[in-house]
Length: 280
Image 1 (cartoon, rainbow, N blue to C red):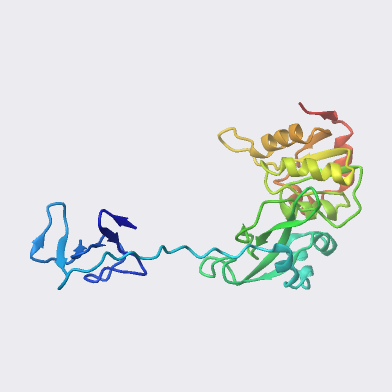
Image 2: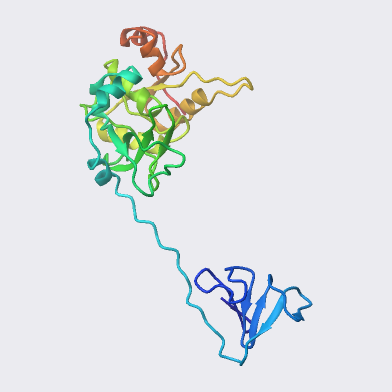
């Protein structure tokens, strides 16, 4: 970049005096260095270091940041093994079949996906899909100790099982609660979070022929009166525009309900007393 006869230094063209890549400038007759002193102190700050002979103004080429490769989540998932799901199923308290239907696999570290300095060398991966075609648009990761994040470049999407759709779908939060619902024998589509995914859910329900929904709101009331799980469920109910109810498990979430001995029959017995409606 040039400014009235001066060119700013950069990493590719550092200051010839202090060898740094910022603050200094190079002109026709010398270098303005803001770190190394010379006999020519400038009023605005810095020191002028004249060349032995004047020369033409240098115009450095603009350095363009190398673009990161576009993520192909489906291709990446295909490179990861799907064996070992029983160990994950045991640790989560869900069935191996439920995890397999969600397309879970063992993810291994690859440059750019996540930093080994902050995350383990391997994790479990769950594909996130769009509502329209069910295409994989991102990958949710989960470490063995329960930390969650996503592969760089992922788009938030839905956790849709490779099962025959049912008339009624349960809509829990996240892949593990979705796996819990499937373990209970319920047809379920997972949301990316309590407050997102509404538009994709609406498209997916229409595509899959789902006519009614049970929105599972995590039991996560806060001391300050906030109810993110329930408030997110109400928001979703208004977005999807079909007959639905909002059900909150007596435990923290649906997976804890399953681990505590909850059954699909217990849920259905409770739902008999609910009023199904289209939220406006």
